[in-house]
Amino acid sequence: MRIAFLLNDLQLSGGVGVVVHHARELALRHGHDVTLVLVREQEAPPWDFDGLAHLHVAGIDEARTRRFDVVVSTWWETVFPLFELSADRYVSFVQSLEDRFYPQGAPERIGAALTQDLPVAFVTEARWIADTLVQMRPDARCHLVRNGIDKQVFASPETLDVRLGAPLRIVVEGNPDVWFKGVREAIDAVGEMREPRHVTLVSTTADERLRQAVDRVVGPLTHAEMAELYAESDVVLKLSRVEGMFGPPLEGFHMGATCVTTPVTGWDEYIEHGWNAMLVDWDDLPGTARQLDLLARDRRLLHFLRTNALETARGWPSWEQAGSLMAGALAAIHREPPAPAGAGAPQLMADVSAALDRHRRDRQERDEFARLAQPVLRVKADRRVQRALRARQHRLVRPFLRPLRPFMRRARSRLLG
Image 1 (cartoon, rainbow, N blue to C red):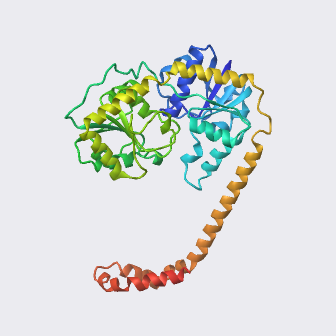
Image 2: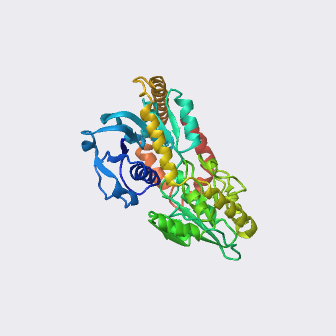
Image 3: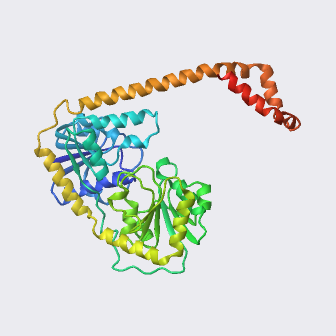
């Protein structure tokens, strides 16, 4: 088959890495003609993925001139040019419900949600996503293909050493500036530990505060370098708020590290609390620190979790196995009748209506707040009031104004209604 995967870019990220792995397996082991189609102009050179040498890489303009058997979008923004390409079947590879990556009110949140209502077949990497898509789109085909692990790079040891006496070795990875990764929260939790620890942060964007809070900062790292880091670590600390099927703890499992994590979506694909990892509550930094302290003190428990994590990893599919499942899913989609032209239309209209209602309510709230704020703004614009506001900051004036604060708060409340 002639298969195209649509990507925004080929920069380093977990999602792009998954697509490249699947594309490589489809080309090398299943004989498919696979093209990675970049839907944007590229400003930076691609990350040096091992599998790129075996794949075609084309721009969107070139792809428009070709005919494919299957075209696969890989991120909500890559859905927009999906139907511009000529193909027998159109597929959306869903690695998470991507509207969750954006805050309430962000236009991207609406756009990402609406792309799930188009006439496509779905392939996804996690059971929870598959279940959600089936509930939202019972009219659409949905295939579950779990991510694989490179068993040669993340080559599991035959046995684990029992680690006694040394500080608990913790690894935290991710971009601290991405709110849902929970990197800053993880570093704060480690800072509340009482037991000795050694913390490695894998990040290319760590600021000075984070650098001062950990023992070392490394990155970017190749997969082989990450495998070495996991092998020397005891715990992968992952406090994400949004995930599809997060890979770093599973990679750590392969190298003999356990995990402390939140019950983020996708955790139950391979994590069992108290068996191969430990779960902690949301936003409970003291509780997270106590779990880590427990592992630092109780080396029997740590070894128990690490041993079971390694056994869990041995049963996880390799990329060769995952690639076979992807090949089967795309072949089945190609054999099946195409999605009807109106597939997803009822859900699309319902989602558009809900988005309009939400936007209308937000506008009403903003307008009402602006109306209530007008008297305050007019008073603050008065020159005499501005002089008084400046004067109250003077060190000689502040002590005299302190007893008047309750009266000023009540006056503000009356003014705002």
